[in-house]
Length: 179
Image (tube, one colour):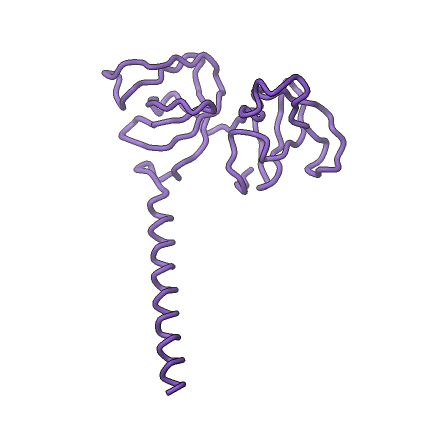
């Protein structure tokens, strides 16, 4: 009797593990857009003037005009040559893929804007919380991102290169590592 109960539990456990593995595979496949690239993902604006449209076509109205080349945006959906993007303020719309670049940039703690003049993101000499602070970045400062470890990102802001905590920028996902 006890052996049958253990065997039944083992069969149920194996079935659950197989179902979980299938769900993980489906989630991984669903995380890729028609381009074959992951969704969501961060990119930057390639041009100094980029129209944000209400739909995926030049026939749709422009809802916003970006005037900052290199601004990070998050691609959240793909349709043909159009990408639905979200900016650091949460504004969403459609941009033609030709106006986007795979280069990475980030914004220092945009959620801290307006919280006072003493709020900064520390740029450090090394990727350690105890490393020397080489610059203090105000919330909203844009920076180029060279690499991220999952906890820290090597960035350049106004010609100064150093490391910032990945949790203090918008433009890299928590735990995301890349070079």
